[in-house]
Amino acid sequence: MAGRYKPKVNHNSEFELDLAPLLAVMVKLVPVLLVSSAFVQMMIIETELPQVVQQAIEKQDTNPKAAQVAVEINKKDGVRIIVTENGQQKIELVALNSNQQIDMPTLHAKFQEVKKSHPEVFKIEMNPDADVPYKEIVRVMDEARKSRSNDIRFPVKNEKTGQDTTTEYMFPEIVFANMMDG
Amino acid sequence: MRRRTRYKPAVKRNQTFTLNVTSMTDMFTILLVFLLQTYSSSTVELDPVKGLRLPSSNTEKNPVDGIKISISPTELKFDKKTIAAVQNNNIEQAAIDPNDSEFIKPLFDELQKINEAHKLTPDVKIGKVLFQADQDVPYGTLRKIMYTASMAGFPNLKLVTVVGN
Image 1: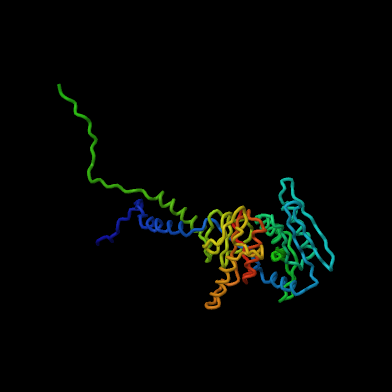
Image 2: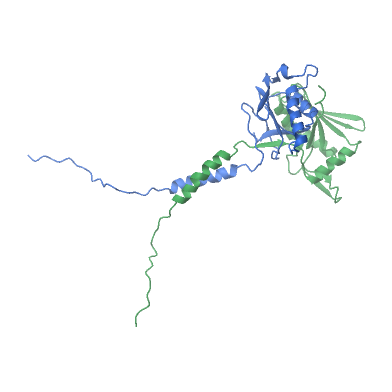
C-alpha cells in the first residue's frame, strides 16, 4: 500500500516582508500631515461653561443683591480685588513682587479666599489701567478662572435637580467694565 | 622577465541588490504617529499673524468661528486686510475719530459691512470677534478695538491665546 503523501514543510524557512507599499503610503501621508499640522496650538478665552456653572451665573445676574467683585490692575501698585456687598466695599491688595511683577501665587490665593466667602459669585469686573500689557491681563484672568488645586473646590447648586455639587471654577466670567470709560 | 599584471577586482555587471527599508519604515512610523498627535481637529482656521506674539494661557477652549481682528506691533488687521498702522503700540492717529479718541473709524466701517452683508445672507459669524493681540500691546490700545467692536454690534469677544508657556 502506498504511503500517504506528506508535503515537506521547512519550519526554519525565512522570508522577507515587502515593505515597499507601506513605505509608499507613508511617503504620501507624511507630507500631507506636515502641511496640515498646526504646531502652534491656539485656544480662546470665553465664557462657555458647564451647565451647572452657567445656571449659577444666570442666577447671579438676576440677583441685584449679590456681591460684586471688581479687579483693578495697576502697573505701580499691583492688583486690587474690590468686593462690594450690601453697599460696603472690602479691598484686598496684592502688591508687586521684588521683580516688579504681579505676585501670581498670592493673587490666586486671594481669589480662592474671595470665592470661598462668596461661592455664589462667578463674574468679575476687570478694570486694568491703560498701560497694563495684554499678557498681564491674560495672566490675571488665568488666575481667576479656575482653582489650580484639585483639593480646593467650591459649592454650587444644580438649579434643575436642586442637588449640591462642587466646581473648580472660581470666576470664569470676565467683563471689561471700563471699556466704555474712554 | 615576466611582467606582473595589475590586480583587477572582478566586477559583476548587471548586478541587482535589495535595499533594506526597515529602518526607513521605522522612522516614518514614528514621524506619522507624531504628526497624527499634533494634528489639529479644530474646524476653525486661525492663521498666525506675522510679528504677533500671542500671550499664553491655560484655557482649554477650542476656537470658534467669528470675525478675525488682529493687532500686531506694526498693524491692525481686519481678517487679512490691514486697516490701520500701529506705532509704539498705538493705533495711528489718522484712523482715530477726531470727536471720539476711542473710536477706530476704519474698523467700524468694516464691521458695518459685515452687518449689512448679514442682513442679506444670515451668517453665524455675526456678533463674535476672534481677537488676536500681541502680548505687549497695552490695554489702552485694546480698549479702543473692544469699544469700536461693541459700538458696531460685536460685543462677544474671544481672546485668542497659545497653549502653555
